[in-house]
Structure formats: C-alpha cells, structure tokens
Length: 311
Image (cartoon, rainbow, N blue to C red):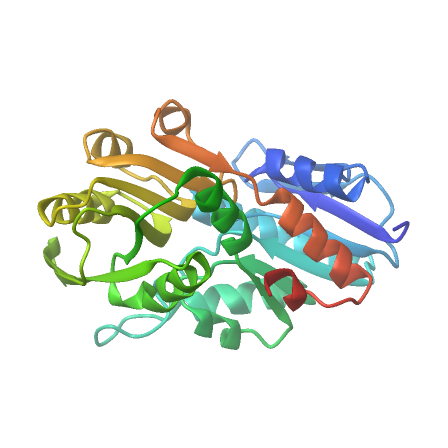
C-alpha cells in the first residue's frame, strides 16, 4: 500500500476521509482553493511520482465548480508524473444528458467523459450511473460500482413482512427487479409521463394493496417524483411508503417537497454530502458507501476482482 495515494477536492471531504480510514492510510495533502479572481488553484504537497493515485471528487452541486476542480487536479497529477491516475467520481453530473432528445442539443455526458480523460485520468470509478451506457463514452477502463449491497442490508435490517419494490419510472425497472429478486419481494412499476412543465401523469402497474412499498431510484433531485409516486401508492392501498436512493442531489425545493410528502423514510448514501437543510430532515437516513469504495480501491490497486463485491 506504500504506492497508493488518495486525494480529494472540496466536493466530499468526509467521504474521502472515511475511505482512507478503511484503507488505513492518511488522506493525501492537497491544497484546492481559489485565487482572488475566482480561478481554481491546486497544489499537491507531497511526492506522487510513480504512485498509484486516486482522486475522490463527485461532481455534485455546484457541479461545474467541482468538475473543473477534478480536471485541474488530474492535470496537476499527470504533470507530476503519477504512474496511474484514477478519478473516483461517486456522482457523475450531466448523466441525464446521455443522448440527443431534440434537434441541436448536446450529449453533455460524453463531453464530461472527454474532459476527464483529456485532463489525465487513466481509469475511472463511479457509482450507480443514471444510464449504464455512459461507460461506453470513455476510452479508459471504467469500474461501475453499485450501492446495492449497502441498500439491501439496510432494507433487510429495517423491513420485514409483505414488501413491494417499486420502480418510479421505466428506466429503473431492471434495478427494481434485481432488488425484488434478492429480497424475495413483489415488484411494481410506475409509468411516468412528462411534458415541458414536468411530470404530467403517473400510472401504477402491479398489485400493492396492503403492502409496505419501497421506492428505488438512482437519485432524488427536486423530490417531485417521490412525492407524486407516494401519493399514487397510498391511493392504491399500501400501508406505508419508504424510499431508497443512491444520490441525494436535493436541489431547489426538494426538502420542502419531501417534508410534505407521504414518504415516511428516505435512505440515501453519502456519495454526495447533504446540505444543512436536508441533513435536518428527520425522514432521511444516511448509509455510508465508504467501506465499499475503499474495498474497491484496494482490489483495483492489488489487481484483484471488483465484480465479486456484488455477487
């Protein structure tokens, strides 16, 4: 482990510290700040020549600031002759812009992949991408990790009896089906229709009457989907509604939406640090993915299997 170094920017320092605790190594000394005109300044205060270096940096809000911090850190490491540079982007911004949805629109997820690669990353680690095909936007190895082991353990410890796993849209059906199979639970799907103003209508597919509903999703942004889905489920006779989400983006009026919703508990991971307002919400339960990420980094460094973590 002497050749392993872990650094972080300003996006999620607590997560980086917990990962280093799991690896039993100190967090690398890097100064990431701002010049007087707002430009990002980066300085690594220890030798990285010939080292295997990991940069923990989710591109969470403000995503453009954190993305540029990451790119500048990667460039500095490349110029400092690090042997292998791995970007650990626990939350990948612009993931929903993975295709052209209208004429003359960008594929921003591909642009972000190009930026990270050009900046100097030799490998990328990420968690619960919005769409798996984003891995194909990279010309470097991508280790796509899943928060499923952590979430499944939480569900098994806190829920028993008649549970139904609910996918809030068609894109999450595969994830929800895998959870339902492992939990030996039933599955329900919500058909969500959108227009320019937002969510237009929801239709429930499946039997949920008298059951505990657990909504699974990869991220919660404004909380509108969870709010409307919980109301729909309650109208169809569920006993209680809970939610498990990997990335707590929590933008705009998400806290007030969730506070007034019928969702009793919302379990999120620490891939993104919670805002003070979200942290004060009594419905939220935070699950740490630091041991999972730490174990993945250790296995990659030792050239062991990573996929066996999710069997």
